[in-house]
Image 1 (cartoon, rainbow, N blue to C red):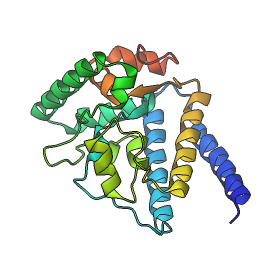
Image 2 (image 1 turned 120 degrees about the horizontal axis):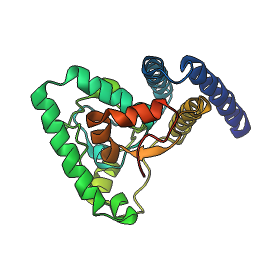
Image 3 (image 1 turned 180 degrees about the vertical axis):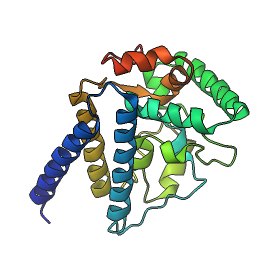
Image 4 (image 1 turned 120 degrees about the vertical axis):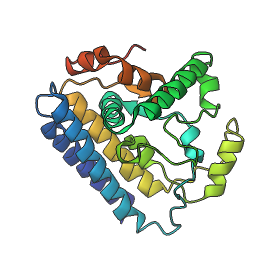
Length: 229
């Protein structure tokens, strides 16, 4: 397949995904509709990644318990944060929820003391990791967590060990990365087309707000910016 043909396929995939998300959102003012649209998008994204990965000659090097990428900043849209919060509130017991809130609070405090430039090169463990390095919300993890992959775990380790080093190779497969980013962009544009907050947030900065204060969810469902900048 030529590059032009591939780009045309991405364009069609983008339009189809955007329109499907927009349709599934309903009027955008009911959480159940948006939550369902988010979760069904996740399923399509997972299926696409699984299918495309079979054609990646280098092979994907990701394994359960490998958590080098779980120390990066995770960009999330508001609908993803509230879907995640809903999952946590319905599945975590009080002890697990208290532990999560404490870790999320600690992370938010750390980040508040960092410049944007310093934040990018600082490892901060996702508060949703367990002691074995596995994700405690795997079924509800955001799309960026689903998208990220590696064909070389040693590159991931090097990035973790020296986060300030800018010359470590990008170990994502370019074709798989292009396909998944197209889907992510389409989904975000689909939600935005229904008048929903198009902002991208740092998961570490907004998770605790989504879990503890219902006013943010209400603002978001009313078509306003979900969280303060």
